Image (tube, rainbow, N blue to C red):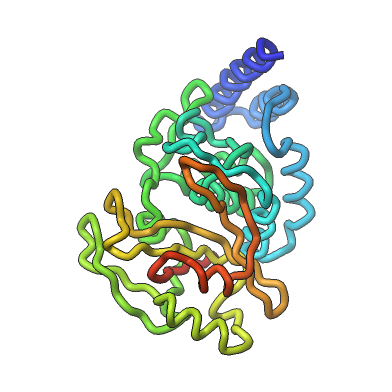
Length: 278
């Protein structure tokens, strides 16, 4: 079994590399189609098959992008937490590593699958959204993950991760920054709770697919990180839920869907920043 899996994986890497070379040089699309047919006929080990992905992408294609992001995030509920300190996808130099996820990978993958129409298109989007510049695949592996986003604050400040709408969620307060940031604006935990317990929340403030970046107090930071966690909003009528990879690198956990208000009430973070893909 393992020998067959290794052989299939190596074959996929060769074929994907060939496909990328043909596609990037404006090659014959008929050749690209043939290569793709071969690539995706080779069995792979994944939480979702390519058929599963393609089918769900078709099912939700007419939904707004934010809803698609939330629906893809919801697909991961119950998935085990990725305890690899680097992230399994980084350690394996892979784009797709859906068997175990952390909060950053869940954010990456939900957006990539929501923005794309096919599993292979999601790969091309990943090469943009996960990196300061652009990811590079060689021999079926990502060779420049050292140029990836490693801090949540870099994602939101890059401009690649939607429009920041933090100021729409409440009055801004400021925390001390890190790494050439003097300060960072946020909506505090207290202000957010006041909003959430005050009655119906307009979808101008929170809607499905919004990315919530949870900020650490300066005294709780370990490696100059400002963002300590990321989650995705799913709105069901007037109810707000947070879908997030809940766990610790040295312990484990799983992707959960929880009441946003209850999460905010008990969270260890100082406040939030929020971004949206319109």
